Image (cartoon, rainbow, N blue to C red; front, side):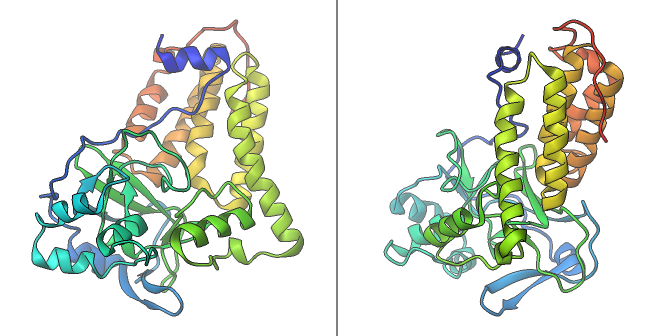
Length: 338
């Protein structure tokens, strides 16, 4: 039994990481940049009042549709020195260097190269920005010239996922997007209150968020804050329900309902995968297949059918008995997705 499986049974589980980070490198990527053809077909970059450069849909884009993939200009640990950044830039072309220094800079008191890095780097994985959500020290980060034009939304319509096979960041839509609508992902942890999100974004990125979720007021705001903080709490509570699968399923269904109300689809796969694990624990393989199918469907939207998560879910969909937790507890019948 794996360490993760042991933790799940002991009630100390955290959600399994479904993406791997790449091998650290200071060398600029040699993978071709996102093609102009695929960019022009779906979106364009333009100035948006009060936001600077932004990525906007050029047509109606369906949920789960591929937008583009982009290799990092260069990769470093998430907290490099200014000299390390300059060393990586020295290996880039003059045009790439010029583009780097046109990116947003939210840290005017830092040296320019370091300030631009701090403003724009992305982890090579599916986590949020490490300044908003602490990450393992072994993580790697990169600069993505095109993706740096995405602005932030606390109800994002774009997902990002690292493809460790092709060494590119992949961007897909999380819901249907209308022509002319801005495409955004989240810069910070969205499972917090509006006040906390605004504080983090102002402190770390130097702007006041004016997304739809951050414009809510009164009772609508109170309900949204309650749902988001409850979802975060349920992440922890579900991990402590390994010996109470029925309770765990109830908590997962509650979390999924609130995620739908908040339009935060990119967390659904984790909850569905945990529901699958509860079912295989008690040999309820019929409902296990229903849950893992839902996890697979969501992961196809958020990271694509060829992603690590989607491939793993598809294997368990075909044979749920192959999971290491199968039949670890006495038989019982739980329930499938609503």
